Length: 289
Length: 289
Image 1 (spheres, each protein chain N blue to C red):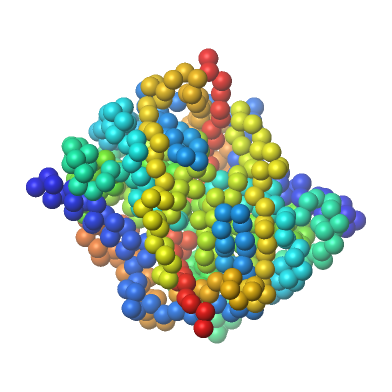
Image 2 (spheres, each protein chain N blue to C red; image 1 turned 180 degrees about the vertical axis):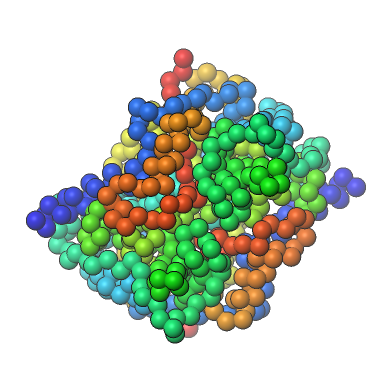
């Protein structure tokens, strides 16, 4: 009996936790290909990361980032500011010619919504937004009362750093690597998200230490080996990713199931609410066509 | 002018982001030593992790975990189930003698509060709790209407795995390594939290792959080199950590400052709300006395 319980423990737990982190049935999930014109391959010493850019939300930031990536601008720059549970930030060395060479961007922190605006709603009365949900695979917040929507600072988003003034971003960027810093929503420009290799983002060398620790030597900062548009990557090295479609009845059903937690593992049901940043959007690797 | 802007960009950004992730003034922060009787040193191939246990909240789980750790039970076991953005789970091999040898625990998922219950409140009407806050350094949720409080599933918490039945935990445990899975609050037993070395938890080998990827070979799973009570660690290898005191006027002031975001970087102020899991509690390394 005890034996049985323990066997059951391991297997039930495994299956339930998998279900709770991606509850769609495999055969139901709808997939879409990433647009190769707006997909980035970031190569780190520890592995490869694929990023989906968001030209539909932040066109100027995406255009600049793509231009810089195509020019090899980020190659051999480093993640110089990496705080566990917050962000991993990279860019060229301060005051270098590279750093000074890039046009400054007008912030693209939110957009106006009209009557035709649609998205897949996840939650009302999220602390940071009247509503949250997904649009084109990206987590968003929206305040219908203000006719505004914006990309939400969930783990894995890619955003441009800036100075205190809103319109000061240029090339320095950060990935969110910890609990969603939603207080940055609507004051920073998010322009992409990691769809593959988030584990490698999580293992970027931290540069921030606690009191009493030795500072991290700049030579140990994680370098960007290359930042390439996927279209420019040699065929043999391309990575083809498809991502879950975040609209329509299949996705809505998944959201409702996640909210309801029907699995018996939830012997007491949690509140029927969802943190939009705790709804993992699935990716899969496909073969080249 | 452009030069100036860019110089300013890098430095202002660095300082503001540091402020926003730990806004207490150094000289004001109050510190407490960890209780060496309830502090754990987890040694991974990539580095050392210090864990503060919570006997005041989950006494039976802590007692069992301490007993197992002192016996070397976890040494050379592996993180066999690691999902990016969710949990890193470890324990002895299923159906091994080790696995079967451990008493089963009654769940300690929440506790009854009375009129004398105090904590440092962070937020009302958090999605998952009537109130959130900190108690003894741990993030908690509480529903005063039910006279209940519980430890919250923030990144870095240590909790015991279980089967579908509530009272089935024994030795398998997990660290939360991603966006807080607060839907597990009140149905799992949290009994500790990482206070040092969370970067090493984040770099534990993922065992979960996406569709289309090769499975991870079990030989590549991250092993636990040792799990020791800090008291049992040889003097030269002990790590002495102090953590921020999470009650009293200094901490309350820090919380209110974090909520208000007075720094000019916040050119538009975010909603005056705080996600309790996005309030980093500070640690510092001290010398042996």
